[in-house]
Image (cartoon, rainbow, N blue to C red; front, top):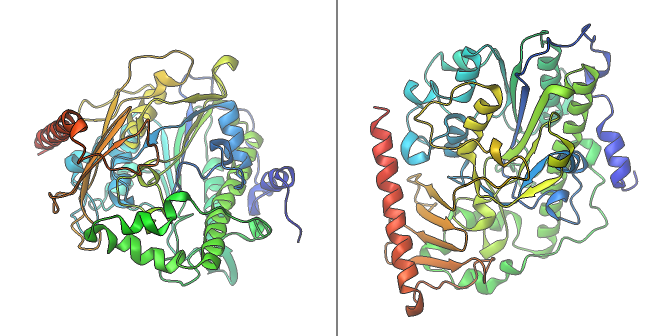
Length: 469
């Protein structure tokens, strides 16, 4: 099998997926209504620059790139917590981890939070709601039924034997998405979340990354450049408590030799291209069913990912590769002049729920902490946030808890269990966060202001949590 060109990959990605090609088409289109359909695509562990449209010259993502050309791409989109459990709870509820309190080993989200989740709010407003893929959040008994009319939860491993045939779950999830779409009724809008397990590694398998057969030949004859921040000197410069973490353990699984680095990153890229392949089939199915002109597509991820930077793998820490994720929004109803835009406003994962509600024309609960970014989907520059707060609070000895305040030009990071160490980065002069300026006396005022801001965020979020009790 030869290497696919971008054109060949795009053509392959719009081919029929399993039963898609033989599904009956309903007659007519949904009744003309102002309420659009909404398709949220949430990948797992996709860093911000792992898309062709984000400037990556190697990875092939023609379908996401097409959405970006016809929609809006946000260059500075962040998660408030770079770990899947807490981030997904934030995406559903529009609240910070310190407010909703959910992460690994914690009790399920309480009804106070699930009741303001976007699926519950939209379902009560008449939307048909659906979910396919990795849920990743514990909720109380019966809540899933309140959230979704249609649910197909999947699990690892990525390759499973289904009815005697080995299948990659990304493709199986695509078929579940098609099943949902075929059940759309005229006049009833839908909101569907496809939350792929890919490109999350299969941590228990030495191979780590598994991809659909349609992308197996991609990247064979390319060499992946090793990031500058992967140089051993950046690992050695860290304090001891940051050297010996789960991120370093997983670095040894994936990146500790040049040969392994090439194989693993290519596997990671193939998994993302596999998602893109299925996305192309889904968008073709939307068009075949006559749903494409009224379906908004939002593409994002639950957290970023280290590809060897600072001697790390996975996520959890507050550096840009870990907290910064893709965000592409395609609205087929948008005027031509508002397409193909790239926004630099700082958006957050907690903005997804209120934005979805805004698109659907339903009221946004006052307890939601994110903001709808719908006003940013055009050339106008409305007032927007200039500071964000991020945190990771899982009490795990292998993952340091951390807190972060990021402004347009500065980032402050601290570690609650290691108060002796803080970090301050001048992002304009040092976008890769190489030089910690916390000890520079010239930055004393900046450091003090950022620390006070961090304290203020925590007080505000704890106060907000009391309103849910």
